[in-house]
Image (cartoon, rainbow, N blue to C red):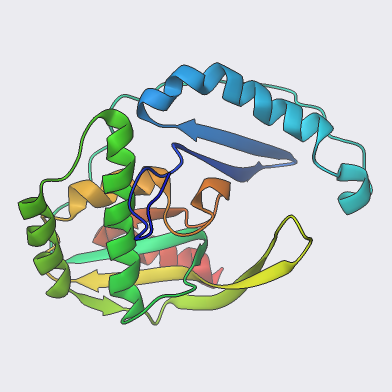
Length: 222
């Protein structure tokens, strides 16, 4: 659903996982008008976990039982972090940075804005050209601190069993400057991840208020 320049419709969902004590929580989040397929999509996820994932071959265990399913609907998003001149983005899963040109921090935030803009089409919305230009000018004026990002990589096998390696980053990206015009779109992007393989759980992040920074640092030390 994309053209040669990468424009078009992104896939209207993300899948991600979290640990809850000894349980694994698998979440499927579907956006906008694609929700008409949600019932079929969740059945497909459950069937895939039971019948497709190679539990015995990869983990030497039987397929785990699905003990609970919950469905929730969210209209709108939560408030963006408080306006100010400082913001930290914490990547909760590695974000693909393969093919990044230019400063890494600016590129990651630019991708977040494009991701939010593309996903908005599933809600019947789009950014006006003058809004895009204004956001780009705001982006160019920001200062990015990438010292909290940690390099890594992940392997992405294709249908020919070729394990292609992709460069990633994980950790904290700190931003300083006038963020006010960007915050609403960043709050949207927080719901839909960013970068290649975002639908598979990569590029998951959260926006932190300056008041949260100390808590993140303390948890990192422990």
